Amino acid sequence: MSLFVKTRATLVGLTLTVAAATAASAADMTLRGASLFDNDHAYTKTLVKFGELVNEYSGQEIEFDLRLNSELGIEPDYVNFLTQGVAIDYAIIAPSNLARFAPSLPLMDMPFAFRDLDHWNAVLSSDVLKPLEDELKDKADLVIVGYAGGGTRNLISNKAISGMDELKGHKMRVMGAPIQAKVFDAISASPSAIAYSEVYNAIQTGVVDGLENESASLLQYKFFEVAPHVTLTKHSITVRPIVFSGKSFAKLTPELQAAVLKAGKDAGAYGREIESREDGEKLLQMKEAGQIEVHDFDGRETLLDLVIPVQDAYAEELGAQDLLAAIRAK
Image (cartoon, rainbow, N blue to C red):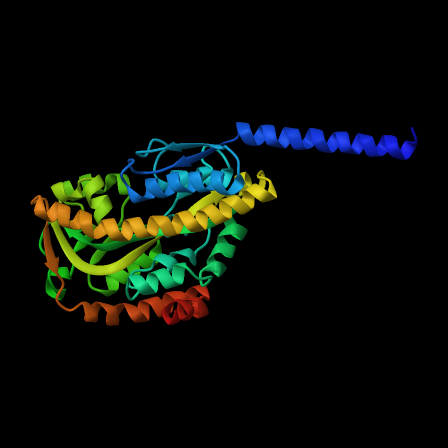
């Protein structure tokens, strides 16, 4: 046998060995996820669908180990795990919890950023947010593979709020991103950043009078027990990136990376439909059960006018005026 034939045979054998090893590792692979919520929550359903679609699109049988009910901590813990590439490979994360790595990211979740559900869906179905995705990948090695969300956030409080007079000085918990506090301060409330796990007790003890959130979280965490009033400010429609650890993503084959990206996009759309539909259903469920009282807000247009200068100044501070303009124009 010639040297050429021997070399070629060796390469073929090596290729087959590598291919077999890759297939074996794929079969043995476990991707680890985390959710704050139980099986009934839209975020959990989204992450389950994500795993199913990865296997469908890749043609492989990867095991997805999804831990529920905050078993692995809360979102700031998830972010730490994801950036290190340990314990968790994927999760749904609020943009405010990613702000320490990518300060511009909360723009995608800024109060009063979206006119309505159609505007929100148009933005998330486009590439408008790609500059933020690139920033997060560059600064934190985190990959946004899709967008879930869809809950409409309202004020949840221990007293009725129906207009500007009652909103003035209202002590409320907000998420940690600075834009959250700036917006609610601009509309005359008194915002405080408090850890999510401490909110119930903070309301119970009078540290704050309430929070702002969507119906699913109000129901899941039973905030209605200490804050039974829901005011329909409709100030946010949630954007919740499905985030994959960059370190974990880099270990995947190119084919599996492509499957993860496609699955993330489609699972996000699936989750957005579920949450936007269930949001109103859960609000009605709690209302009919006598767990909450729902109030309209008189003068919502005033709120919109008050926050525009804050949004503009924040975008200018971040050098993101073009991005904000693109979101508004979509």
